[in-house]
Image 1 (cartoon, one colour):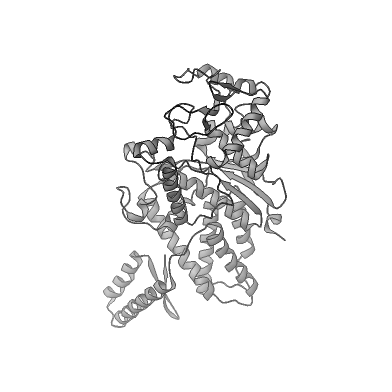
Image 2: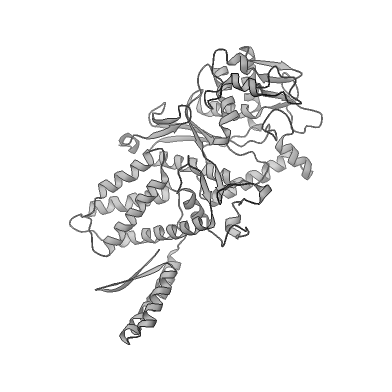
Length: 492
């Protein structure tokens, strides 16, 4: 029996603002769409956090036995620099400043995006479509919305008529915004005068003579609005209605609100059952911003070239750190927090290394079934990775007790215990074990030599040297344990 049939998963739905029991449209299958990056600059840490959250979710669905179609797009056209309907396309602007082709910009930063995610051990999505690869689909959706009288063309541009749509539907259903309040508080902006209403958003923009990226359409040579691409690609690959749509909380309005309106207008139904949004990142308790110098780029962790970091950190440690906060919580980076996560990561990995050396007994004295349930309960409760990690460290305590002979597990329970820890650590959390066997063997040899020196010091009643060896090893995270069978060690 597939695992998903044994577990009731609850997801916090941004549409209802509460946790709901998850029921896919088709049993055993999940369609999930996540808004990808606009590839005009190096991927930033907020992107990494968002995509890590959905990598965890994707991994857990696969662990439960679901067949998942995970679609994550690449925005390579149509995203204007101020997220509105005026200004310059972000990619075209970068190309103009660097005097290169827009697709050179796209290629450079798409490669960077993939390299960074690969470094953090992300699973690739099932499909990674691009906006420029789906211009035809976007034009067809615009035609449908125009035919229904919910959009209008003016001067070669096409705008979605928000007020007309709101007569029978609810524009603001996701963000909770009231259209009447929006009208009252909106000022007319320069460059938006051709719209009927300031709330309307672009489905197609006529390209100005200097605009590099342009395609022919029934209305003008131009380019699609930013919001439209996600509606076109999500419905093409997942159907007119699908299970999950995700992204950062900054996309809830206007981007995701506009997606709902477009899809509903063209397909006469709500496109998504569960909307999921990740929270923001802060650094030392303050918003990350290049203008203030309060920021870290992903590669800074690996070079140490950042004033906020005291040392170099490996990718699995950074990944482990980010998983210690629920995806809906604000995550604050600090050097102290990363140092603590580094110790926790190595403690967990060293414990996992001990699993295969454990021996079965005739009976079990540890509540493995209760522990197993607590691990799944954590993930079934809106993918609560910090609680899962706490339960895994409870498992680390079990490993130490089993190794010391203070507790026991029969063969069946021991196999369940080993399999579960490895599945959650590597398959679900996606951690990579960077402690190679060769390194472990060499470390063990050095520590055994120091234990021998300490034993000789104790025999000679040189307590000062004995204590010094023990205390300095402890400072490095290596704990010595004296027992009736001699001295053993653990790396924390």
